[in-house]
Length: 140
Image (cartoon, rainbow, N blue to C red; front, side, top):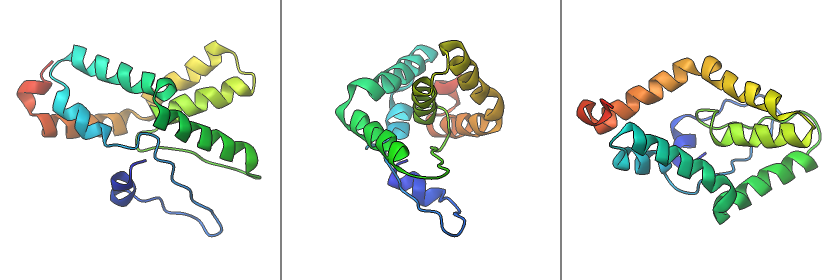
């Protein structure tokens, strides 16, 4: 999560929990996207580019490597998440499930549950985007 998103919506941690923030993106993609999206095709292209970045951008690859290394080297229960819980968290969960031997269909079914469990959060994010870009640009 970006430092701004952590400050905006900090985690409430139980006693004894160790917190580590790994900023996967290293930049503010939300505002970058809000400035460039003018159509549904733009939105799709932005999301495809963002997700492609998980495996081709050096900063993101390094951040994911840090996450997976920490998961592998830390004892006891662990939790990883992001603001929305669907993009880089979904990618990380899919990789962990793959390493654990889950089949691709199960991994996809699990990922698609994000739409159901995050419907309210996604709705709020869409409303924020609408407010940021205006109704005429978001009418697509």
